[in-house]
Length: 250
Image (tube, rainbow, N blue to C red; front, side, top):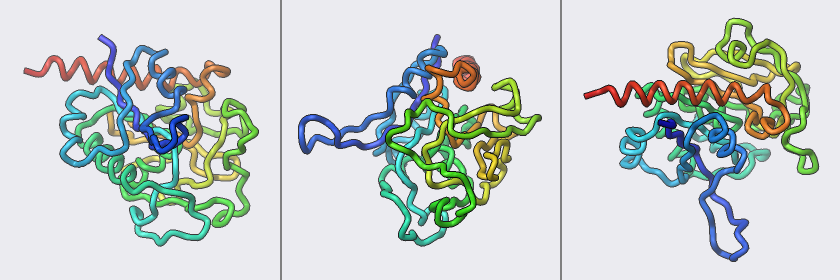
C-alpha cells in the first residue's frame, strides 16, 4: 500500500472568484511525492493542537513545504523592517505539528520555509534577511522572471551525511528562492550542506529514522533534473517503512 504523506499547505487569494481564499500547495510537491509512490495529502494551514494527534496517527510522512516568512517571535527576536509577510495561524499550525511528528519519529522532509520551520521547532534561529544581515552572501532571493527549475548556485554536501548518500555525491547545482536562512541550528540538527558563501543549505537529525531539510526547492527541479528524485524516493521509502511498522502494531 502507498504511504500517506501530508504536505503542509498555505493560504492563497488568487482564485478567479474574488474574496474566495484558498488553502493549497504547489503542484510540484504533489507530483514529486506521487511520482515516487506516495499518496499526497494537503494539510490546511489551520490545524490546531486538538487536530495534530489524529492527523499524525494517519500519516506515514510529513513534507514541510515552502512559503512566506516565519514570525521571528518564534525564535525570540523582534521583526526587522526587511521582514516579509508572515501568517501567524500557519506558523502555529506547522510548529506544533512538526514538534509532535518529531516525538513520534515520523519521517520528515522539509523544503525552503519548511527547512526553517524545522530549525525553529528545535530551538534554532534565522537570518531575517540575508541581504541586510549577511551582505557578503550570494543573491539567494526569488527572481520572478527566473524559472524555478533553473540552477542558481552549487552546494557542497558533507560526505558522511544521509543526504550525500541519497543524492549520490557531495557537489550539486540547486535553484534558490529565499531571502531568509538558518543562522543557529536547532538542538540535535547537523549542518550537512553549504552554499559557496557559507549559507546553510541542508540539515539532518542523525538519530531520527528520516529527517532531512533543504533550503532549495528539489520538487521544482525534478522535471529537468532526475538527480533530485532520489531524495523523494528515499523519503517515500522511509514513510512506507513507518506505515508497515504501524500496521504491525496490535
